[in-house]
Length: 497
Image 1 (spheres, rainbow, N blue to C red):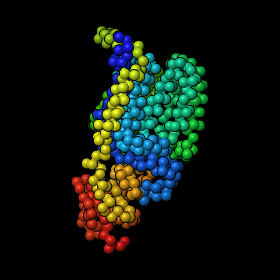
Image 2 (image 1 turned 30 degrees about the vertical axis):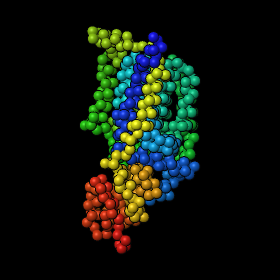
Image 3 (image 1 turned 120 degrees about the vertical axis):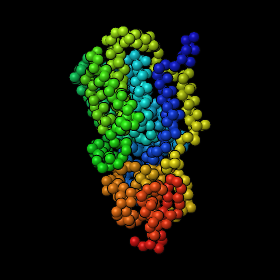
Image 4 (image 1 turned 180 degrees about the vertical axis):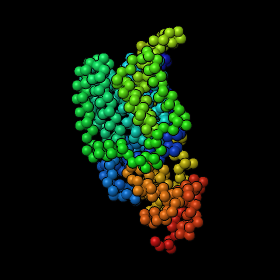
């Protein structure tokens, strides 16, 4: 019977892993490429790196910034995305994103176990992490950061529990990889620093007491050095730290960098979790460590500042929620005592994952995504100019294009021979070009000057954009293609500027 149980009855960790895979591949699968074109740009950059055999140092994808210096701080993740796309198309990219998503979600459960939480409560916070992580489930380099940050949390918590130096050994190695994958490698340094401070201020939380701060500090220095092992060296640090401050205008026009919108469902879900922490503290039965409180406050502020940081809030704070919930129940009576007793009966002594029987279900789900369900992983033709781009070989596309910014990534992916006017990498294009783009696409005074200044010969924009309406009335331009999503105008050959 024990052998049958190992195959048929999942551990809590196995259930969470399968739930994460199913959420990403089934429930969210069709949405991965539906409204976001930045992933397409990353894939194209990955192909450029693979074809040239080197990390690009100058821009080759646009005509507005062609030849200008560029820092590809995500080059390795772009290569990984291109490899996945080359191996299995967009379904392959979706599977890679799903695996990273699953690692991040499952590591929250594992971190709660490292803190000594009951497994049912660890599963509960794992499911909350699944909910909050899915807010930004897009096939882009940031998923490598959430996965690696979650792994860092597991290893740091294990060191706090065991005081074994060997537990910290993988961190500098992972940092070398992380610094080449995504600018979020700074988060790893923040986490180690938090544990150094935690060991000094609240030594009772660490098996090695205050002495635990020393190996953590050594690893912090090693990770700092490891972060320089990139094609850009110190230049990467200058770029990444400079990007933290950001440009107020560019941040305001980039949706993912905006603050949380509490009128939307994801905002209300985050708000509920955000208040759950202080609510548990106010019971008076919870011991809040400096480390747990510090991480909560830091990442709560980070998530409130920018909605894209909500998954980071989840991985850094939710493991403590499981411990705080148990302590709050333990100090109560009546119904709280009954609930706690039931949770303890449910707390089985099994491993995080049963790697055989339920792994077959995981593999089957991935195979289903790559096979029978592969058709759902595509760019939405109701959002992107899919039909228009398919017809470009029958249109004169010589000369420079003015394209709608959210479509820039898709255009780079679907028509790689066409340099774009702008795409979603607003930090590279800068405020001046972003303002020019908005002025032109919205048909404000001076739109002709923008198109003339950049020698634009044809446009690919939405049918309802103000610029499209103006071009329809302008004798200098002719409409050469239209559908219900996109319209293409071309400057008449007889017109000279």
